[in-house]
Length: 82
Image 1: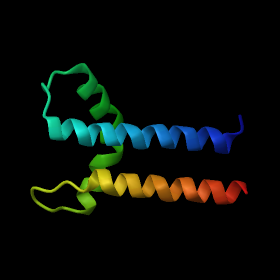
Image 2 (image 1 turned 60 degrees about the vertical axis):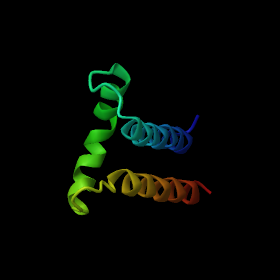
Image 3 (image 1 turned 60 degrees about the horizontal axis):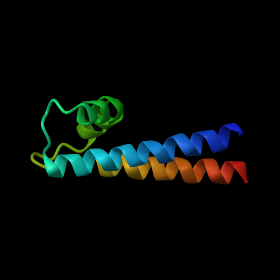
């Protein structure tokens, strides 16, 4: 597996982890839930800086921005590999 395909696979999985975090935020599970803690630990390093870029009180757009940036990065990787 070449580096571009590996990067695309990692980005694809990470975008799904972000989606899981969004869904879990709607369900509002137990804050000590291991799955929730694991997802937060994985996504927070990316979403925290993005949250500061769009400071809208009561509305967290960082998952959407992270997902869009991942899609752009994936498109760039695919075009660079072609």
